[in-house]
Length: 181
Length: 181
Image (cartoon, rainbow over all chains, first blue to last red; front, side, top):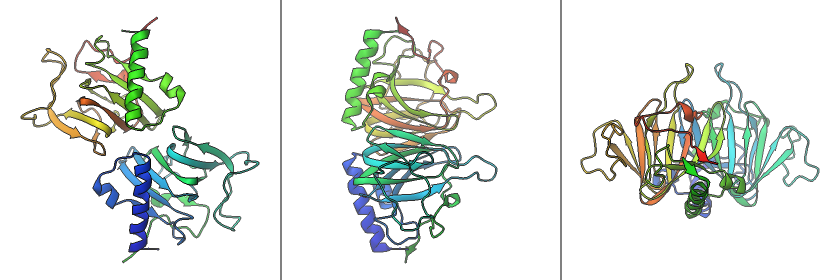
């Protein structure tokens, strides 16, 4: 759970990264940046900052910030109501992001999972994305990603987002942010 | 039809606009920018420059350049093979773009259609998009758009693009670019 002060600080910090990437946001978008701490209470280590541009029945686009070394934890997008799970393309706009998917583990990985729990992260094939590079994740594929030491700004182009349906490998995670009133 | 020299000049000119908008492209993307003159042979008046980041069965994202005053002509995205037509969200990243859709015509429109043929443009409700502003076009809705005098860079987030299925109001238009060998 985030306090309102933590939420506002994270939004302010995220705006600085959008500015570095020359991403123009409206005031309304800045005031409503989603700050996900995944219920772990350690936002700058495990978390994600998100502006959702559009999310209709058919497609979705987001602009995401990862603080330096911040991790979006391992999850997958399952089938919902008989419809295929979310498909998403990550395109790095600024900084560096390391994406981990099923496959041959990196011999010398650039990142470590932000946990000591060996059950929380299970896929370790590494894909490095620098600005202009992208990768498409098909439905129900486990993945996690972590920013390099300078942070990252990443666009996501996808089918509909149904975040509450996401399945995280770490059973302690709650996807939908809770803010203390 | 474009000559190879015209195609290469347009790509070079488009790259300058992507750079103004701080959009990072790979060398491969730069070398393959789609230049659409819509078969009218007057590219800088009626045309569009496009980088397609991804176009799968389910979703598509493009980064488009409009040169100063350049128009993407009126068209709609019909149902194809029993599937709903393309839905697309335009988000202005740099410059100004004027989008025209069905509805009350603008009393003092910022743009004029780039033709004297009154049958080629039929919708005149005006939506001005500056950086950070966006608008969603649902399937089978007529629309056209024109850049302001400084040009524009516009992201498109959409369902699958099937450009050859687009229906243009101007019967002289050919959507798929032809380049003279």
